[in-house]
Length: 257
Image (cartoon, rainbow, N blue to C red):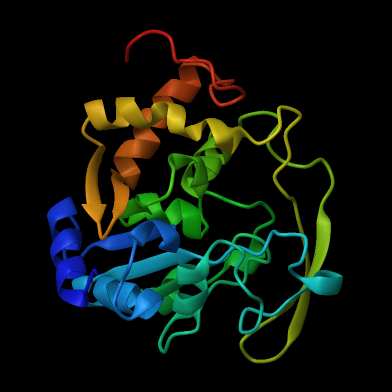
């Protein structure tokens, strides 16, 4: 049985520090038996980041999300796991207004970090919450999750204008702001004729570890990968400049950087 104490030890051991900015992609099931369940896991990360910023994706792109095109950040459930849903409901957690790729944040500068997402029209713009991971030199933890879940790489592909990633036509949404007012915005979904390119994001995992921008560890029973967002973006940027179709398929990468 994993406890708050053992989780704090594991989080420290993988390389997470109290003043980090950390985004977590997660699989609660991979954690094994935890005394207190999801709440204890969240407690452990909040305690570990006592001087930092903690972020979880709270995406709502699933077909059952945003009924009638309406997004209310207070009530709309996250479609990316139990930890994200528990986290977004916690006190002093702020959620962004992006209707499909929102994030929730807690800690240092959290309220400011989530602002402005409703002004963009794509899932991962450079000046939005996903792009800001680069600016704040964040770490990204794959807590029992595969790099296939790496939304940040969707964002990096946007920055490099990789073709065939964004739907040709937008979808209209109504978004409820914190003051209760409703705004209407058009957003473009992810789309590719190659299927889901994120299923090929894990092909860069080995290279990322070799280049020192990712490392392995175990938190609870979850085999995990901790990545440096800036280092990962720079590495993938180099790869995309060499091969703009890098993630179109799962073919092994050729050549050396």
